[in-house]
Image 1: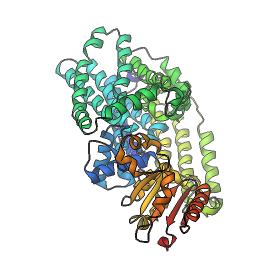
Image 2 (image 1 turned 45 degrees about the vertical axis):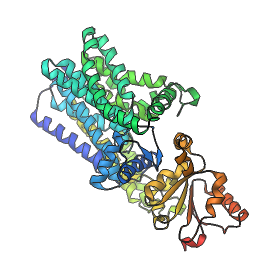
Image 3 (image 1 turned 90 degrees about the vertical axis):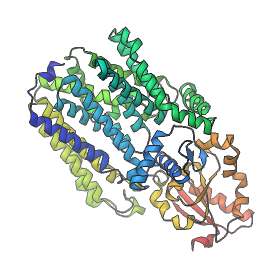
Image 4 (image 1 turned 90 degrees about the horizontal axis):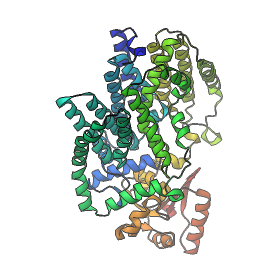
Length: 571
């Protein structure tokens, strides 16, 4: 154990306050705001439509996106969302709930790791709060993507393995089983990275510890349990869709990792360095203090594991051809623990050290509060909110002011634990109100189209909807009772459309558009959804004129277009 922590006076009162604050931060940042901001397409639409389709069709083994086989991910994330839908209805809160709950689980694992390391509840709760108030964690933990659940389960696999390494006898076996179960569940969420990440972290760490026996013997139990966890669904999906494993392994994993410029999301090797720093905001601003504190801490198995756990995944994903900012989320739990221990060690020996964050936060909050009455209310002249809700800017400004005040008070505290606790309150408050303050009036409608599309739902219920690939997720979520077909380039559905005849018939190519438009009637209109209004509206008028069809009725706003044949259907 580290002297910088064990030398601090113990206080049951501080333990209770820290634990209650950690619970409050989780509720305030990850639960209360879940339904406050609009769904962001295409990701949240995709991960909402697939589980809803599972519920509707009863097909729980092979994932489908609007009827097309969709093999990019396994099923556990969809199952969790479907369970939330069954419990809370198909809404934004339920859609994001699995990400929020699994992020809370990850925070609990941080608390468990630090508690086992330091035998202190206060330090453990502080580390959990630092984790939850890191920008990338706060964003992905309240967004309906699979990265939050996956990272939490990977964190569980590594944490439980560490606890097994520390334990003996039956307790060790139990932790190894838990590690394997978490690994298997992570595989069912996102695939083979569930094996790769714990492997590239734990093997070098055990070698660093010179525990050659543990390196050769401990992974067997987790490995067997992980295989047993995955096997039932793995066999079932192979029997139902034999093509699944070929696509999932070679195209979704190997090609993405080694495809070079042809891989999905190619980025330079240094891409994750700024992502990690920015994702740790606001704690990245304390990194000079963290490094200074960590130099004062003696080496231990825990610190060596945390270093491997933080750095090796970042290096691993930097080698990959395809990169997304979300890939390195599993590194944020150990990074938060290192930040906490480094800050405690630094402020233990630098009481009263000023950081002066309030010099930026308080003036920024004051300026935003002062300009609130002068913000335009009409969306047509640049309102940040489509409903004219400029009061949101006042809420955000007040949260920034409060953050600055908390930061100022924290610098006058003598106890480093209290200083970091106060430092967590400001970002937690801002992160809790930020979803309600998202400037939807400045966003592309195609990125948050559901509120706009909802107005057309009565018409689309009895219509044939032709949606271009960038808009199809929003259409699937907003118009669940419509008959939706893909128009033009298949985008992410290319593999399913090209490899299955029944999906090819569902896909309408541009050359087939005129024939489909001829089927439009007042009883069954044709609705076309596109994301390039100016270009598309002119081409649709030309197509209608050339075919002798009446021109469609248009509904458009910024970067999204709805065209309806016959035009009288919208009257």
